[in-house]
Image (cartoon, rainbow, N blue to C red):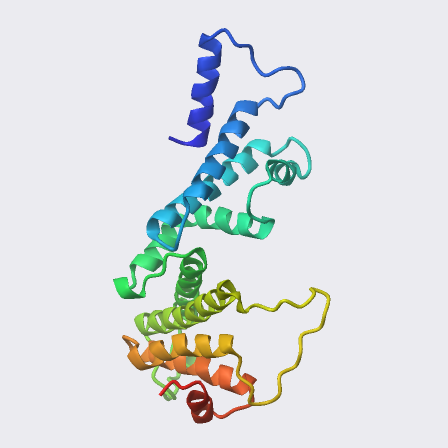
Length: 266
């Protein structure tokens, strides 16, 4: 049952009980907005961990927020944002927008995630959004340059310089890159939750680390990506993971092999 259905049922119960419509000064969709706020809080409290069930709860929150935004359209500039602020929901506007996007594109996101092997599927919001983004890029890339492939001016065939990546190969590579990035994000989140984040004042400048310095958080991210590099299911996944490791090594001013050794990955 949607939030709108719940609100309609509440209106019917009020009428049966002889309760009048919302008092003068209340918004015409008062009952719907109350039900929406209650649904959002209830589902957010139930959303624990990175599971498919939790993602379903977060999708419902995003769907309810989309319904509220549509309902408040035309009631004044910024009405939706003001309503959210008044409710004091336990998430900021950027996370709110992310949940609304999740709900609006749910079918496509699920199709992209479920196309992966079960051991590669991710059920966090960041994870599924990264997988969906990679799938969109792969799909867009495969549709470019459809006609005239291998032909020059006047229909003359050009010599093939390099074997073109098939659509399936490109999709696997893009998804592998997304998984590598998700692994980095998860490692970074785990490091922050473990109390390893900076305790410096927000206005202070970050200290510049000397060349060759590798933080604990970087080592943790590298270990995650190393797992994909050494145990990836496809060559594309391994290549994407190695590329991420090379970028991490370059950032600390080290060669790939030296970085791997310094992180105790072998």
